[in-house]
Image 1 (cartoon, helix red, strand yellow):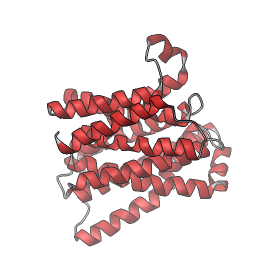
Image 2 (cartoon, helix red, strand yellow):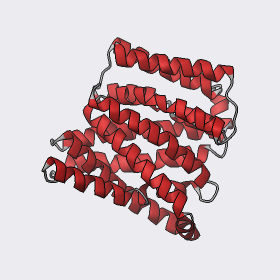
Image 3 (cartoon, one colour):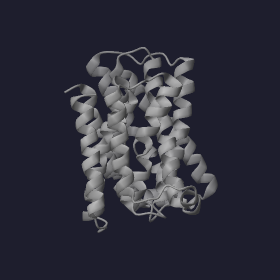
Image 4 (cartoon, one colour):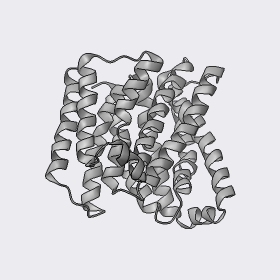
Length: 295
């Protein structure tokens, strides 16, 4: 298998676990404070990964050009917004549904990538993405009407999360490619830069909004550390995979995360899985098979 597949599977597995941790952490912290944890507690591990990688590959940090800085800064802000919307959605919908709404990110990446960066897909590639998203929407059990989106804040937050994360994924790829360096190194540099910026922004916001949340972030250090470590491992997977492959294909394969999410939903949060949800799971698997074998 190609290297991007391994990193995507790593990312999907770690993101599902991290999201479960974030839901538990959300019982103690506000949406933005919970979002901040995934950056602040991941930061030292991101730097450690970069320095180890530089040593192994015997390279230095590439020059951060203007194109990289613009794309990476915008991506940093959009990821904060997307993650905060996902955490907020948990207050209105159950774990699996909130995550499924955010997973409309896959089709949004494909559309925005084609429109903004000429990142076109093959016919089978589009088919894979569309089938996967249909599977996710079936599982979500949400009627996507105008009234439903605006009357149910959870649906709105979930969709907004998908949009924010879609823009983030596209800009992560563009930022990494802008460095014109070894793709493993450029992905790691992009990761470290973004997490540093995101840690500063989110901590400043939380401090201004409610200083007491900072103290809670330290008192809940075990759960925060779990979120931070799983977050950085997942990010290493996403950033590296997106550097090697079209972001739409990465996110289409990344939908295998939903299987892990449903298992967590059933085993940890004791939320039932219906026949309809199993149909959606089948479609997601079908989309992955099409992507890996024929697209």
